[in-house]
Length: 115
Length: 113
Image 1: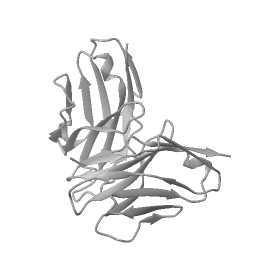
Image 2: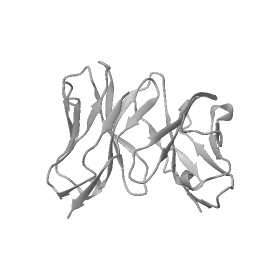
Image 3: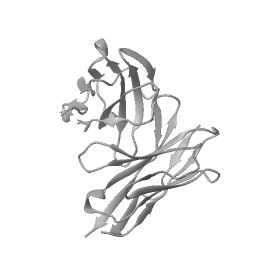
Image 4: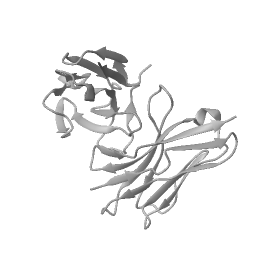
């Protein structure tokens, strides 16, 4: 399967712990995105990479959040000192381009539960 | 600021019937792109259909078509001959800039056998 893969699919942690999510995009896609989705809502943009460069970071991403994409391949999203409000589905997507048609190829998401 | 509104939290339709999902948006731009994405239960989000604002012709993909009313800023999705596999959350989205999508809250579509 050459789709976008995310790991882990589910993570339960205690408040205050650090968690890290990994995303492996489609290999030929140079663009990578992280979104957060809470129940009953659409995805919220978190950050965007073109190759290894992080070109945009949402104000939703507090200082406790950091994302990397070393060598322009896989990406990691780390949340430090987790809070209950961080509980959500974290979606990774990739796309080819530019130019960008608007189509995103999503992974199945990593669901975070903070107790 | 661009916003996307889906006023129907949930819709249901009988299998083989037609259903229309509503979406309105707000923008001051004249050229833009709109999308419908589908998110089946426990599966990844996929693109259903895309509309470019400068094209007056409504986009169609097999059983899926849109009714794009630019002046009214309305972008509805029509699903014909509904199938059980169409059950999912449907999200309307607006492309902002070169890498962002602004999403509606979604409509849950239930297909009754």
